[in-house]
Image (tube, rainbow, N blue to C red; front, side):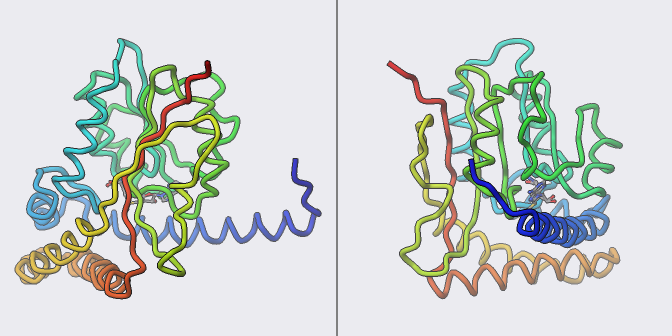
Length: 266
Ligand SMILES: C[S@@+](CC[C@H](N)C(=O)[O-])C[C@H]1O[C@@H](n2cnc3c(N)ncnc32)[C@H](O)[C@@H]1O
């Protein structure tokens, strides 16, 4: 066990709190600006290839890969889904309905959780995924997902906590984009972990194409966004694309889909 002097612990805790506050506020801003925005719904349908409002980088190819892997899980009645960084929870609802399992969503954006709970009959909780440890003693999940919903997590700690609540035969399935410091750096999500077998897909090129396509669609819909008074949503998405393409040009962007299963002993 690592021993942290009191002042280090306090500093880490305060930094984490300020990170969480800043990021969750930014997301809440975004969600307020797209709530019931028709143009954003049309934008999603063009870039994700499906009529589901979402705020991630999952295109049709990535979504189909996800479904192909999730379809292999043997679900029973009474199984649970946990969606980490669920945002407005549309994907949580869709997956929960597809496999007929009870869905839970977790997000540190107050607005996301409020809007999701207002719309859906599933349960959405405001919580930082970083603080998962010991929170679920009473529940096990057959499927744990995250669609670009894990920011600033200590990945090793988070994975350990998730494994402790994964039902036998269950899977953890994560989409994540990373900006590397150096081209040859190893992505934390792709490290070898004891106790798990993992499978990984590299969607870096697919992400670059997604940004390019999104930029074109945004340009085409700019007037429509403005007409609906949703300039803020437009500008957040535009900045996201520019930033993303910048890191791709530098060769430092990586996108992965990774699944984890508990390692069978013996
Ligand atoms: C890019 S959005 C994706 C939302 C949703 N998964 C979707 O596909 O539409 C990222 C979401 O993850 C949430 N998030 C990021 N890091 C988180 C963390 N450590 N704990 C809880 N929520 C987090 C943000 O508040 C945001 O709503």
